[in-house]
Image 1 (cartoon, helix red, strand yellow):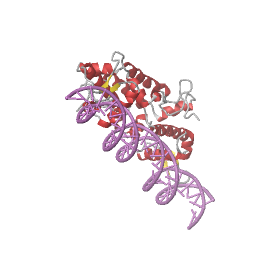
Image 2 (cartoon, protein in one colour):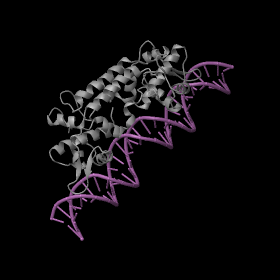
Image 3 (cartoon, chains in turn yellow, red, blue, purple):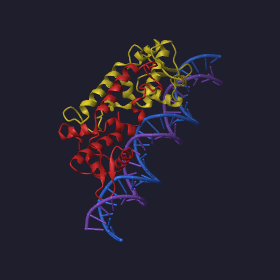
Image 4 (cartoon, rainbow over the protein chains, first blue to last red):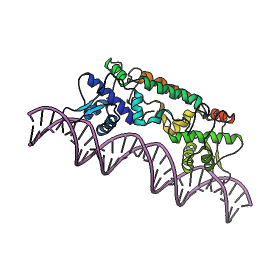
Length: 144
Length: 144
DNA sequence: TTATAAAAAGATACGTAAGTCTTTTTATAT
DNA sequence: ATATAAAAAGACTTACGTATCTTTTTATAA
């Protein structure tokens, strides 16, 4: 459902968060290696996330990526919104320009609940909660 | 979630079915006009659906598109599978190459139910059931 | 048997996502 | 000050989804 770019973004942010807990500030080359993504492209994605104020960065020796407010959790929705665009969860599943309960497409009544449950999920899950699962060894960040 | 091509395909098939009930066999130009899609591209999409044995066609004067077994309902899944590919509902939401209950990504437990409910929905809904809703005036095919 | 109307087919173009390469800027350590 | 290590930036390439244009094939009607 999500594009590769968004998947790289989420995995990269989770890895950055895990490293930050350990007091580290990883660079994009290390990140790309650890999440199994193309190196330079991951750099570009992180550049965009930095511009969107989702993560922070420091240039120069000893620099890298980090969260300056780790207490403030980042929902997956925020990441999706930044990369896929604001409209991502608003589109009609049948492709109509306008579609709502009062003027539905023939798929609306069945599609809307699915889309809304996806929306709910990405608003509940955060970079932090995913990192927590990994640190508890309940899930893995990659499959190399 | 679905690509434009799949949306055109579903809308086109619904329109063809509705016209078939009336004893008509529409051509791609008429179809494109009625579902508000690009004319030539819709022709290509229908060509692919014909090759995939989802719909039938006749060349020459009086030709057009039709279902040769209208009693056998076509699920949306079948259309999605033909256009987006077999893997569409199998992909990991986090982007991992392999991901299942035994070896999950940190999103798996929450993503899988959403993906499965989408899968269930597209297996229940058919071109015929969507057409029925439109014929009952409970939904519209376009929004011109 | 000829004109016509339709889908099929092939070539090409456009737009955006995905990815690479090179240069520039910035901070730090020496 | 200078070398070094890092992100930022810009130009470019590739792949694919989306779309158009032209020609060919096929069936029907006249």
